[in-house]
Length: 317
Length: 84
Image (tube, rainbow over all chains, first blue to last red; front, side):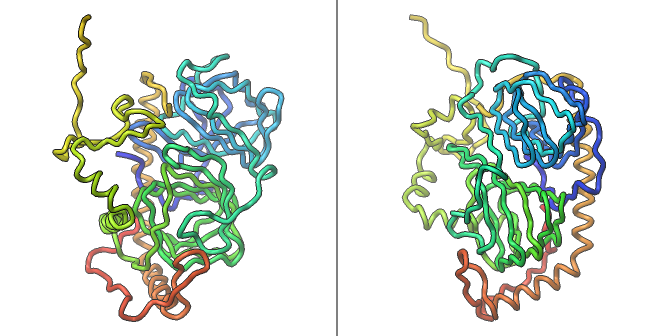
């Protein structure tokens, strides 16, 4: 089971509370936005109390931090509103503090929050994937470059793009009087948080400042509207494609069926190969064999995706 | 490497258990709130289905097309769910 459909949820309706997870220093508070019951991956609004101090350390899960108000200091550099960090699993960041306090969003994408005090990276850390940017000062708004695209007036700043899964994290804004008259769903899960502003969706009504959703794949959303403008941060877990339509009443199964049918027509040769190839865990020559990491669902021509492999004994020479 | 294998402590397991329980309650509250929104949603849907026949539906960016009356979907008898 992955994260449930949490939509809409407004964090202004609940209070911060102390973050008591073992390993973390005192002085951090949180509001839980969504949580994966299996692996503990979660998204939280966080508040660093004035005077918060954290020694150098790492997390067992990749995480992303976005500063909304106030500032944090990492090493000797001050990071204010709009600062975004993508910290891969096992990568150590320097001593952090927040002399005057700060609020932000913390995304733990593949495991529960963890903090291990350390001066050096974990042996399995991929430091080259670390990134940091100030999304307000260092980046400019651009139209979405998806096809088909959202209506004019929805602009993005891409903060992070995962080249393998095509998952991405982005700021987006809707201009005043933005509207889009269609219904959309995606093959990916997506989540978003309103930093400022209210937007409207035909299914869920108004989502105000502090509004959040975690939406699993194939769930209808839209039509869309926004009277006064909205600034938000969003994230997907894989490639985002806009499956547009105008039937308000379709369900997840029907949407998934339609998406599969579309793939069949868009990529007939690949679709046929995936469906008929006996041992169907495609190997990406850039990333290696799926079995080695156990991260690719597959079957052996019998449709049984849930199975395990016996460990092969090494032959003695 | 998205996550490094490790063992969870009892305290962490307890924290997760508590959060999962609270999330279940949060989910139930959302479902109830969204069920209560049904009459307004029905009105929004009716207005949407009208607009796409007159002003059009977005196909890509600023490209729109008008939907013919014969294309308007018929509401199925099952419950209209928006939270899954």
